[in-house]
Amino acid sequence: MPDKFICPLCGDILLRENKSLKCGKGHCFDISSSGYVNLLTKSGKKGHGDDKKMVRARRDFLSKGYYSHLKEELQNVVGGIIKKDCVLLDSGCGEGYYTRGFSDIIKENKESEIYGIDVSKEALRLAAKLCPEVQFAVSSAYCLPFENESLDIITTVFAPMAVSEFQRTLKQKGYFINAIPLEKHLYGLKKAVYKNPYFNKPENTELNGFELVKSAEVKKELTITGTEDIKNLFMMTPYYYKTSAEDQDKLEKLDRLITETEFLILVYRKI
Ligand SMILES: [Zn+2]
Image 1 (tube, rainbow, N blue to C red):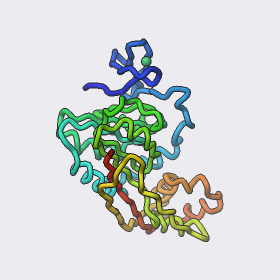
Image 2: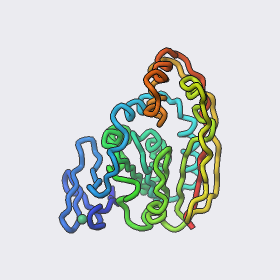
Image 3: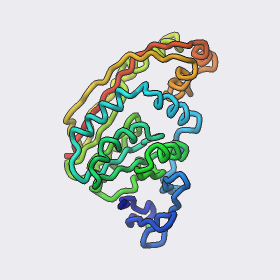
């Protein structure tokens, strides 16, 4: 399989040599036993990404199919724009739940390539297991290890939007697909925890250098059963770390939770 990763230190193409990737100037990056390569340089480091607990909670929750409606809609969107020899990057891919979905759609075309990057090694360890055919690198979205205009599609699902890097690395008329939460996403969960639950703020959907070509809302009421699944969902959210132990305890007592899920999928084209 060809490699598209470039050296984060000098920008040269990286070539596979045994268990590592090397550039012409001799910079060398080891491929981990689970299959991802670490391309995060000191200057690119901004924290270490999601921690083990959060990554595992998300893997356990998503693997039960609670968000399969979002995955299927994302697959439909990608299926609708895919062309021959497509190069797709799932940026901020986490433990690879949606990457798996994208790969299932594009792998029918053998010339296509799929990549995933994330700053969390723990997440990539799980992603590499789930998607052995995908090439994963530890990297920041704000310093992507790809040449200018080398990607056809970039996807982000609840992940950082590095708009200028996406613009640099996408080919002309390449697609950027972004999934974000809508105002009432997980309102039922917030009602169970907070005295004064609030709606998410609506996001500005205009992006410099891109035109919005399609948007689709994906809404579904979920019934989550079992304390563990409820806690895992909560741990996936940014609220978990901002909530007092007392409020967190309220969820420990629940064994059934009904909540809205509301996503917005935005499809942009580079102009
Ligand atoms: Zn180099």
